[in-house]
Amino acid sequence: MTPERLDATFSALADPTRRAILARLAQGEASVMELAEPFAMSQPAISKHLKVLERAGLISRGRDAQRRPCRLEAEPLRDASGWIEHYRQFWDASFDALDDVLEDLKKAARKPKRTKETP
Image 1 (cartoon, rainbow, N blue to C red):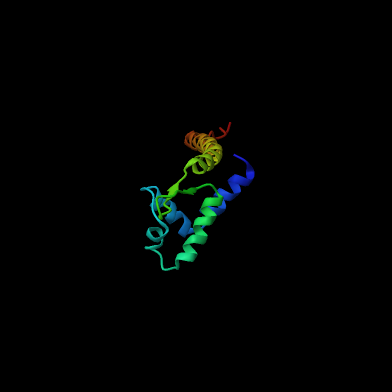
Image 2: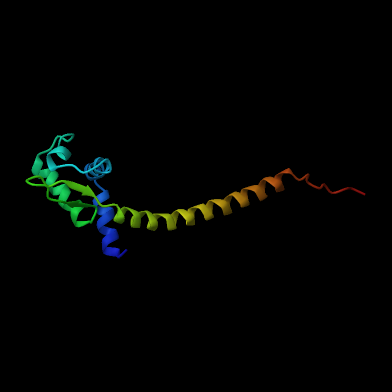
C-alpha cells in the first residue's frame, strides 16, 4: 500500500459518519437514499461523504437501471489493518519485555535479605 493510499484510508475512517456508512455497507450494497436514512443530514452531505470513501477506494458505485448502489471495497481496510498489525506486534513484544522485568523484580523482592552478622 502506498503512503498516499494509507493516508486516504485513515482520513476517510476518521469521520464517524463514514465509519457508520462502511458498517452499513458491510451488510450489503445500498443506495444513497438508504445510506442517508439514519442520519440527520441532507442527501448532498451524504454524497460528499461517499465521494471521500470512493476516492479512498473504500466503496464503489455500480449501476442497476436508474439506481446506483454503493458497495464496500474491503482491500484498503485489509491494508490498513496490516499496517496496524505491525505496530500491535511491537507493543506486544514491549509488554512481554515489561512483564519479564516485573517478574524479575517480584522474585528479587521475595528473596530474604541477608543481614550482617556481628562478631
